Amino acid sequence: MSGAPVLHSYAKPAPADFGPYLASLKKIVSGLAPGTPFRGALNLVLSSLAGTMHFLRPHIVVQDPENGSLHLSMALGQAAVPHLSYAPGTGITGQVFASGKPIIVGRMKDHPDFMNRLFERSEDQLATLSFICVPVLAERASSQDGAPKVLGTLSADTGMAPPDVLRLRCSFLEVVAALMAHQVACLQEDLLRQSAHYTRQDDKPLPSALSALPAIVVSSQAMNHVLHHVAQVAPSQTTVLLRGESGSGKELMAAAIHQCSERAKGPFVKLNCAALPADLVEGELFGWQRGAFTGAQQGRRGVFEQASSGTLFLDEIGDLSLPAQAKVLRAIQEREIVRLGSEHPVAVDVRLICATHQPLEELVKQGLFREDLYYRINVFPLFLPPLRERRDDILPLAEHFLHRFARSYGRPARRMSPQAADLLTAYAWPGNVRELQNAMECAVLLCEEEAVHACHLPPALRHQEKHAGERAVPADSPLSFRQEISSLEKKRLEEALRAADGNIHQAARDIDITYRIFYYKMKKYGIDYRAFLKKRR
Image (cartoon, one colour):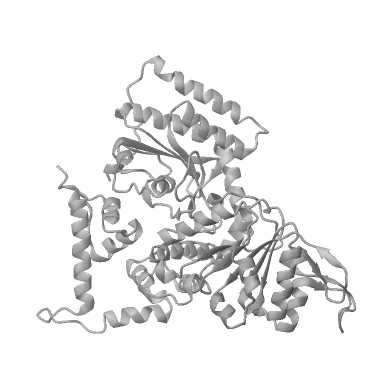
């Protein structure tokens, strides 16, 4: 690799050079005083690094204790895609986390492992800036081999400078990382509490920014676009209509909107309108009084009352009966409901988020969905593309589920083989993210080693591989269509690497695919990027 680890022997700078370092440390130490809220303290650290030391985009990446992936948790400045996650060992930040050793990138553009995934750095910035990343080590906890436990990383961009100056800046960041270890540990614990909200519905979710949602794993431009809209609409009280196929993540987006809103401390109540018989939907929505019908031994609050001061998520609203639609419309307009068996209205204060996979416009034309209700809920529509239309998300999601299930079941699986990754990206995924999650759960349970192979995947995915290798083709026979495509693909990857002088990240950008997919393809075809580094001079 062209990024060398930090050396701790450097020329002693002039005493005057230490002035900004000492001033910044004094400010940081005072801000980390006991009793200071940990998020406020960390923000002060990042502000001091940017203000006194002139570091650019200082940020903290923390490991999600639930699934092991890394997430941008705090940053000073505007992050372009703060919700991205990646595995330890991936990119510079992943390598620092995995090794526990700092790394200095002298010039971002020259380093093949510098991925530029978290911020919108221009080509000029990549060519004129350095990058420093240091580990944040636990104060007391240690790993099984006696090495300090790595909680996360502290990173920043900085102006290019002589090596001894960059080493001094790196050593300074190591000191700062040691000072803020306790606060970063608190940040990691906060992530664990937030992720618990997705599995325990009786827990009240904690307020958080979009960048702190560990369950959202995306890489594609389409889903980045969706998440930016989520960040825009979340702080408001606007009604949101989520559109998309079953299993595409509508419930997760609804939870994200609630968790990023001012109602985050209130309840998040869900009702699947398609899962209930028509004669029970009204009672679930509005509740009933004692004695309202045979068997009603006591009164019950409906979901509108349960969600008061919070958010109500009505999934598959297109399946509501027309009478139920009329009453939902009245509840939205009047902000009050009437329980079954009662004549007294009850005021409710809810934010409504609806979802459906059905074409509501067609249902309106057919008279199966009320036009006035359609316009009431279609205030801010969000379309979630199916997984087959955002293939850049397949491998990051697969890795997310792999680590999560391996941790939950205590299985040895840690990564995917290139062949398994190929099958995942080639599959159409009619069941979307839900089907991918099920496939990875099955694979983790079947896998008895560190790598998930093609044989561990469900039959629907392995069937693709069967056709590819049914018979060997003699050397003098014409190439099959699949072999010809593979040959062209390998040639294209090599051409991209040659044009980028072996820089994998640049080569991936040049042919408009993600770094992750480019890397897997390299492994599949046995391409070594180092062979192209020789052509630089």
